[in-house]
Image (cartoon, rainbow, N blue to C red; front, side):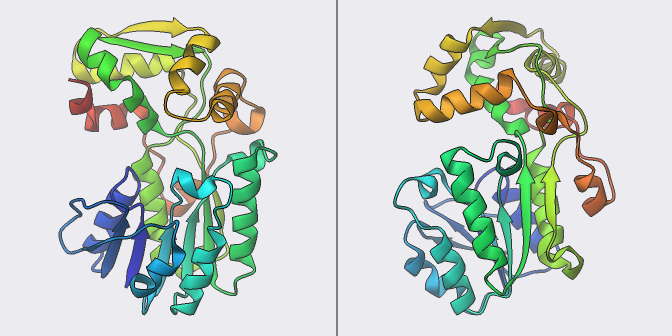
Length: 279
């Protein structure tokens, strides 16, 4: 049995689907009641209370570990989840980390994530670490304005990074959970090309078959909007990356190709599959 945390999100849902289609027994864990793919068992649990995962992890062979935002907060100890997994008999953990532990290692969340990676390495379990960069699904931030006004409003319109389709992260995670060859692997996951916000707006317009205007925000305007849903420090950190990506953040990684035997999907593919969100 394989346990998937964050199972109802942009990564967890397609991962659960892929594993059930591969004939595996899957326990899909999320904080709230939600529909999961046919064939999976859904369990409501809060990763902030690792002891509550004991009945879920008992007898499981593998775990996909995706941390929710509150597990990065002060006082949280996600390393306890690894201990509970080992105690429950889990043999393999695939951890969703972040490219930022390499490219910008000194932020508080990245320091904590790197420490979690180190805990996993020292656990005695089989492990794989996935380090994605920016997600194509972040474009859903624009869905309301595209629906209402056919406008994408974003800062740094002509500065791009190689964002990745979450479905590709899920496909890589499935491969790592199912195939021993990926044990001990650390994979940096990006899309196939650098793409700017303006180009993303063009791809959404093409998927809609309708013009979408791009409106460039100032950094201050973008920070004010982002601060409504995240701490100001994290908003500044995100804007630093978006506005001035480092060479490492601009690098197109070969790791999706290496794991899956195919290139990562372009943003246009994600936009076409998710166009209903923008209609």
